[in-house]
Amino acid sequence: MLNLVSSWESVPTQPPKQHRIIAAIDLGTNSLHMVVVKIDPTLPAFSIIAREKETVRLGDRNLLTGELKPEIIEKAIAALGRFQEVAKTINAETIIAVATSAVREAPNGKDFLHRVKTELGLSVDLISGQEEARRIYLGVLSGMEFNNQPHTIIDIGGGSTELILGDSHQARTLTSTKVGAVRLTSELITTDPISNTEFQHLQAYARGMLERSVDEILANLEFGESPRLVGTSGTIETLAMIDAREKSGVIPSTLNGYQLSLKDLQELVNRLRKLSYSERAAIPGMPEKRAEVILAGAVILQEAMTLLGRESVTVCERSLREGVIVDWMLAHGLIEDKLRYQSSVRERNVLKIANKYHVNLEYSDRVAKNALSLFDQTQGTLHHWGFDERQLLWAAAILHNCGHYVSHSSHHKHSYYLIRNGELLGYTETEIEIIANLARYHRKSPPKKKHENSQMLLTKHQRQMVSQLSAILRLAVALDRRQIGAIAQVQCEYYPQFQQVNLLIFPSQPDDDCALELWSLDYKKGVFEEEFGVKLVANLEKSSVAKLS
Image (cartoon, rainbow, N blue to C red; front, side, top):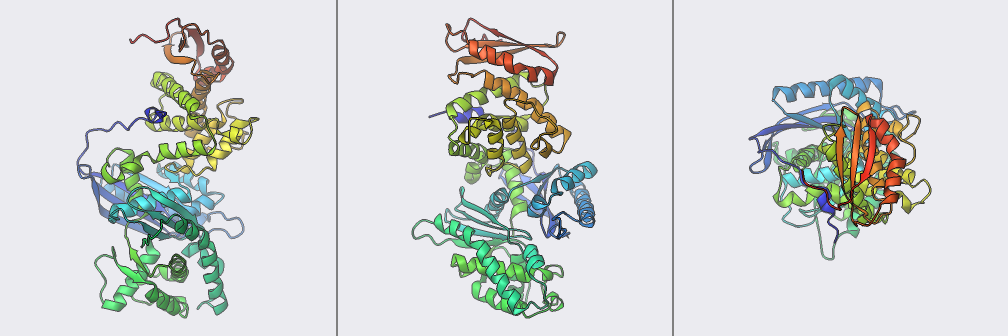
């Protein structure tokens, strides 16, 4: 069995601090939310110490162009600035922010995130629908005991609905569908109260859109399994709150674990469809802005429950924001026990894509080891990239040749496309873009501004990362030109006074002159030399193993 994990390595963890404070922001279609948590690394667990919410409606986009509206962008930036101040007041050491469907689908979404970075210094990660579902799953797992039993999770957002199947370990199914409370309200509802025709269309549309996700969930159930349905999001919490108030006359202290039956939901939907906006807003427990979109959200839940054959939904108050926290804790080595399996999600998904496109893993693992060796030996002298960038280089090295699955001709361009559209879980959209570009530039032309894929890299920092790491990847590919592991080891010697890097090449077989590898290095070194401003000289050593210094 190949030892592919060795090239990945574990995160070097610092001695744990007590009670680290972290903030997570979710830029949703309907609202911007922030949760600030106090992490106790010794447990490990976190407690929520502050919540912030602002209804911004990023999903209320220009109907003709699909772009985010200027006034809404201004409102969102102002809200994010306030969130930053709150986090700073509570002494949060870092803010992790993610954006979902509204920003993902808007043609000017990345421009908006660039403005947020420029004006506020806040980095916002754009994540795919499946990655959003994965983090929702982590959030729910952190707040609810599954007892190794299968659970279906539904999260109804403003622009999309995520349906997930999991059982305390890995998620079996992660789906995201473009039906959300804000999206369906703006696209399908023009009457107030809603007309019978529009209501029937709303129901049919929601059902039709959800069918594929539900089929995927049901197909992954084992014989005899009947998973509990867990619901997250403002829509489901509001519906549960109204139901609880009307049944008991009091507001529950927590909605966590509250069960809303399909029968009660259907009765509530039938009431809501007959009310005008002002009448819905007057219902005790109904937030004013939620009243605008609650009917569409309730219909999505009703149709999903019907298709899944579930008679009740159990509320969980943890979701994407908390999942972002859990993901951060996993990445920083703060979680072991039941979630340990999740910590290798990036590696497992890279290898899954590699297998899907019939990548020669033995070869790509050697290229990855060469790339990481060159990266490590030149770190601090030729470049100053860190652990995160090293992970992206590893992923690109493993997948750089996947484009052969389409065609040998221009396979580097096909690699870009396959990685970009491969749903790599565990990575943000920006990270996937960087990995795809690194693979794209492992051969032929170096990055150029005129290239369409290069234009997807919005910042100078990202473009420089791709230029420098792809130059390293080119050398790593050259070092295994015959794809037989001819070179056992490479040693870098940097002479700053001469602006020269000597590559000492140690062959696997003492009698191998490695002529093809040396030729390939000479052929490909130009991009590396230009990028780092050095001269590269490769020398074949007689010994097959480098001496330890």
